[in-house]
Amino acid sequence: MNSEPLLDQIVRQIEGAQRILIFSHVRPDGDAVGSALGLMWLLRARGKAAELSFEDPVPMTLRFLPGAEEIENRPLDGHDLILAVDGSDAERYGAHFSAARVSGVLVICIDHHKTNTRFAALNWVDGRYAATAEMLYHLARHAGWSIDERAAHCLATGCVTDTNAFSTGHTTPEVLETVADLTRHGAALSTIIYYTMHLRTQADAMLWGRVLSTLRVERGVAWALNRLADRQEVGAQEEDGGGLVTFLVDIIGVNVAILFNEVDGQTTRLSMRSAGGYDVSNLALAFGGGGHAQAAGATLNLPLEEAVARVIPQAAAIARASTPAH
Ligand code: 5GP
Ligand code: MN
Image (cartoon, rainbow, N blue to C red; front, side):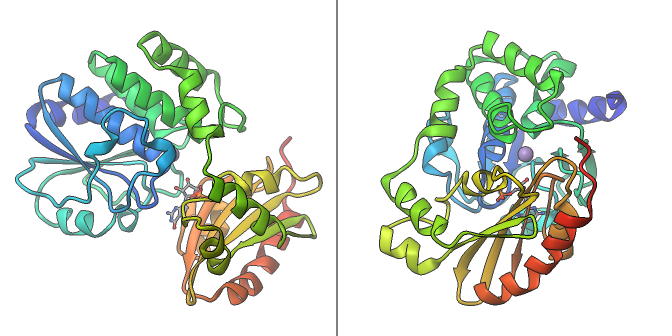
């Protein structure tokens, strides 16, 4: 992947900075947390003062990562470089980022979403990478930085979660080689997979039952409702229900799966997955969101039932019209 001049530029900016603030996206997932923390440990090993800013808290199942307890919703405050990782547009990084990006401090974005809007002054965006964490591994190798055990553990986590434990179509030989090398540097793969893929709260398991009882499958589309009242009754959080939409897209005959998450009476968050050859990223973009061909999302200012009525006909068109590549 021929991005050497850009990587040189990024390395130069990082080496010239002293206090670096790293942002990642709202509702952080394994690649957001793993990339930001991995980068923090890489930079600290270079003698930099690196801090993290996330608008939303770290999910329970990612708190095993070293440094997770340092993640805060913090503003720019005397930092001389801003790094934004794994979010495809400026809005995804939250309010402190919106303020920070107009401060005059240089912003560099490193991201693997093909829907990335190139909102930063320097953008290293490459949709061929399976995870942003994989890009950061290559940045470290390119720069000749040492990768300590903590950085390795965090970066491997991003690669594991964004490939759904090496099961998605974008699980390339390169990402497998990256993770193999990260395990040589101290990443503990079995621990990562246990925490990110298997561990769940009792409330989460109860929520699965509620959500699956709303399942509908029609015209190649599977969808289900994650209702606020159900979450309240079982004591689940909005972050619970992870993995549900992936479960839905695995139903035989389903090409598009959508989980409708009721945020409040006027807001519904879509979480979408598609089978190989079917692309949900444009549907997400059309509703103001983004993502990848096989995993995308958006937030709609519509009540749950209205969101379903708006989205399902378009999802059905995608599930019907596309020609699967494999
Ligand atoms: P998830 O369904 O796991 O929440 O999200 C799947 C993918 O879609 C992730 O790559 C995530 O970054 C992207 N995504 C989800 N919601 C949004 C959104 O509101 N805006 C953008 N730009 N991307 C989103
Ligand atoms: Mn990612």
